Image 1 (tube, rainbow, N blue to C red):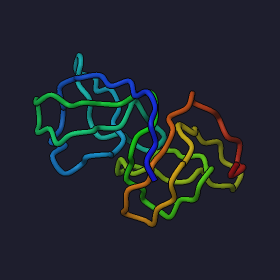
Image 2 (cartoon, one colour; image 1 turned 90 degrees about the horizontal axis):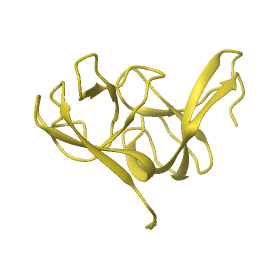
Image 3 (cartoon, rainbow, N blue to C red; image 1 turned 135 degrees about the horizontal axis):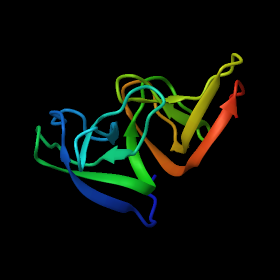
Image 4 (tube, rainbow, N blue to C red; image 1 turned 180 degrees about the vertical axis):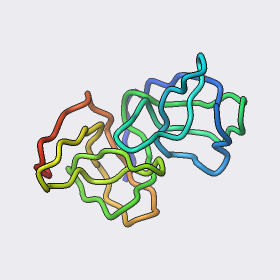
Length: 128
């Protein structure tokens, strides 16, 4: 399914080699104007291209984008990030998690889903 809408991309240098990390979560690096693979619960945007270290990374930080998921995700589920830069479903279990997006097109683990980036929401141990 295709979606049309506004994306807000920004171009920054890649702090890491992201050549094989297209559609993974990235976060701001401690180095000025650079992004690296996001840690669990961290998020700035989704890398759209294949930059190597210090090359220009195109990062969508608002709007609808493709993403790589680290577990099966369903339509409407809230997404957060795993330590590998994959997007995963916010889980129940009494722990507080940050949700960064909503899934628009479901996918199995390791595949491409489509998500809408939302304002960050704190979820207190509930899936949706």
